[in-house]
Image 1: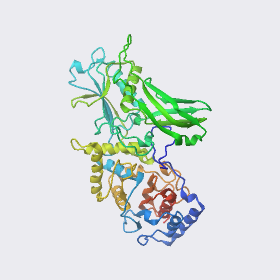
Image 2: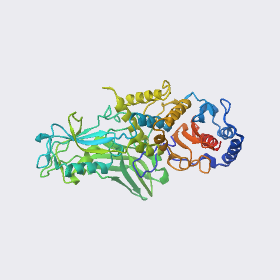
Image 3: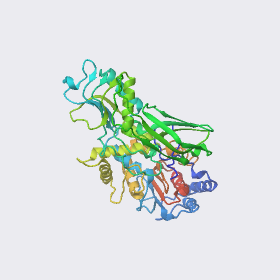
Image 4: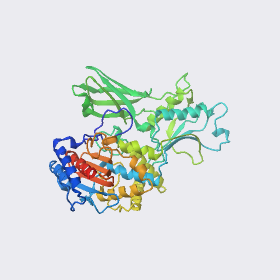
Length: 525
């Protein structure tokens, strides 16, 4: 993989694709851009079936990628019989352009104001003393921490929830322990035993959804080396975690290539399942877990990286204990996984941003993990009793496609983010979906989520100095053998076009210039 190669991150947001320089910066492409202007003056609006406009064809010919690997559909929104069609009905691997289906279906089925939530609850009758905080502040029944696909549940959000429990609800002692409820998704721990997408499952773009989603299942690590020693500092620091860096040797390699010689860390949970009381100590002490780092790391290098390397339940338990203790509270009993009783009442609630706001950074940055979380929310809303969440989500999106005039028969969905080798949709069906959404009730909200050419997101450095700059709004897609663009491009008269272009070939990255040339041709027309 190329575009999915992890980079040094400064926040937990998982970005699948890095912005790329526009291919139109090359001399050959600049000549083609001159041709775009001439073609626009000619008034040419319809190309013969299966042909590209001459300037686009010239750019593509230079790539050496066969036309059979390229699928294109481009037409004015209100004139679908005009424009271009090439291999339009062939199912193609769309990479991250598949996020468009998840986003559009979620806006329509869940609503733009839909919000994920995290709750702290207690069981039973509110008037029963045994299930309410006693005057002494002791909660003698379990506290339930219930995950609801809250995309914004970071460490500070959990701390604020616990602080509200402590100060507004008057709870000082959790005598009944804590039950962590991830059962919004079925199975509740989908990451256990799941096959790796590639050789780097620990990086943010590969995180498998969790209904609790505490800090995106990520922990920040600072790795610093000089000529002889390596220092590793996690944040936040959990007292029950030992980090063994003895197997991470130093090597004379460039700092920018630090992850080329990195191997997947190994996490070993404590051997005891619950904290053990210590003499003369009011708090149980949890045996330490061990994280072993492996491979090689550059000398004289500093990297800050978010990693998914710890067991989720262990991390959650450590966070709860540490944060609760910092607030002056006590916690006896275990922190375990389970299900919230139906009659439980909410003491504290946290909500993420409304979906329409959440989708904006998700699609602009091509955030795989949050897209998959939203996909699972669709599944949770549509699931029949006993049905697993992922197939329910796949069914929900296909059912929604039918309402948009798209036959889903040959559409293949896996996780809704395009981080897949099997997801497929034809350029024609993607274009039909985009046209339908733009005409629909949430067209403006959907349009606002897309990267703007030459301005932001994964298009920030593409289309600079072209007619598409600041005007085209498109989702990018990049995998090892895929490049794609799908979205909306205004032409020179301001008429909005739907444009979908996908290349599936082992040399796909070399033909990104074809997609840029096509979009610029539409914008200049």
